[in-house]
Image (cartoon, each protein chain N blue to C red):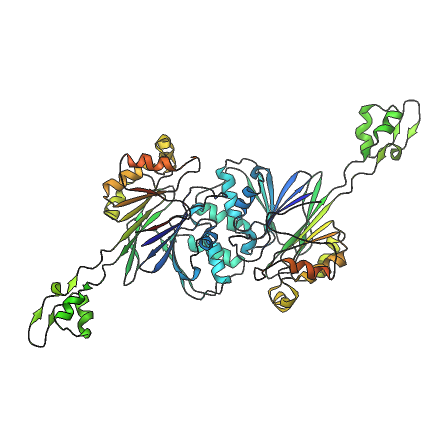
Length: 301
Length: 301
C-alpha cells in the first residue's frame, strides 16, 4: 500500500503548499482522494500516471478539497481518455461538474460516472475482487465523508516444498490456495494447513478529513493499519477548532488511541504555523505512532 | 502601463507552464484578465497584491481561461476581503460561481458583482475617470470576448515656467490643466496653449484570446499601443487552427499589420512545441514588432 501526498494544507493554495489531495495505490488500484486546486499539476510533479486513475473520492464540497476536479476531468478529456471515470462525492457534485462542461461546451469523450453520497451511515461504495471502500461519515460544517479503503484477504500462500513433497499436480494449486483440502489418488486426504501458509494480512487505510473531534467514527476505523486524521490546529487554537468544526493534533491522537490504529498520519495543517513539527509533538503526548504528511511525501505500508 | 503574464499556454496546466492569466496595471488600476487554474498561486509568486484586484475580466468559459476563478474568489473571502469584486464574463459565469458557493456553504463576505456579457457588438463595460474598457467580440468555439483597455486622455501639463512668468495664482492651475484660457486681472487673456504642454499620450492595450483569424476585430483594435493576440499554432498546423478556431502566429501578425498596432505580443501557445521561438520567427515574416509572452514575464509600456 503506497500513499502519495499531493497536498495536505488547509484553506488556500500557496506557492509552496497545496490543498488536500492524495493518491492511494492499493492492490494496484490508484485511488485519488480529494482534489484541491492544482492537483493535476501535483500529479504530474509526482509522476503519477493520469490514465491509471479511474476512481476519485471527494470528501466534501469545500474548495480546498475539490476545486481541482473540473480541471482534472477536462484534462483527461483533452488527453484523449476513453476509460470510464468514477467520481464519488456529496450530492451536488454532478451538477457542479456538468454545468461547467455544458457551459464550456466541453463534454468528455469518456464516460463520467457520478456516485453521489448523502447517507449519514457508513456504506460500501466500491468493491471489486481485491479492495472494498466504505464511507466514514464525518462531522464538519457541510456534509462530509471520510473513506475507508480495505484490502480483501487474499488467497492462502502455497507451501511449495510441501506440495512438491506430496507430489501434488499443479492443477490442484488453485483449489489449495482457496483453502481446500486435497484428496490424493491413493485415497489420502491432505489437510490444507499442511500445504499452505496464512495469506498476507490485508491492509486498511482510513482517510478522515475534514472533521471535528467525532467519536462516532471509532467503530468504523477500529484497528486500521493507517489512519489519516485531519489536525488543522494545535491545542492553543482548540476553541477555533471547535468553532470551525476541525480537529487539533491532540484530538486526532485521541481518536487514533481509542480506535487502536497502528499508525496515525497528520495533515490539513492551518497555514498559520511556521513549522508543522509541533503537530507531531502535541499528538505524541497521547499516541506514539505519529507521522507527519507533507506535500510530495510518499508512504509505503 | 505594466503587464504581468501569469500564464500564457493553451490547454492544460503543467509543472512548468500555466494557462491564461494576465494582470494589467493601468493608471494604478489592477485588472485581472482571465483566470486559469493556479492563477492565485501565480499571483502570489509574482508578488501581486490580492487586495488591489477589484475587476476580473473573463474572455470565455473554456477551462484554461476560468477554472481558477472560483478558487480566487474563495481565497479572497478566506483572507477577509470586504471590497466589492467585479467579474465580467460570458453569461453563465454567475451561475457557475454561485452554485459552487452555495453547495459549499461559502458565501463571500464581500460583494461579488457579476457583469454578464452576451452582446456580439463591442460595448463599453467599464469606465471611470482614467480608464475605459470595451469588449472585442472574438470568434471561437464558444462565446468569447477580448478586452480593450484604454487610458483616457489626461489633463494638459502645466508649463511651470510660463505660469510663473505670467505670475498666475495657483488657484487657476486646475482650470489651466483642463485646457481653459486665463483672464488676468489687468484684462489680458492668456491662451491655454501658452501655459501648457500636450498631455501624455494615452496608452491602449488589446487582449484577444481565444479566436480564429477574424478581421472584424480590426476596427476595434486599430492603432492600439499593444496587442496581445493568441497564436496557439505555427503555420504547419494551420488546418488544425482552422478546425479548433484558433490562430497561427502568422495570422496574429496579419491582424497586427492590418490594425497598424505598435507592438504585438504573442501567447496561448500549444504545448506541443519544444520551443516558442518559432512563433516569433514566423510572425516576424509579416510584422516586425513582435514580443513573446512567457509565464512570469513583465512588460512595461
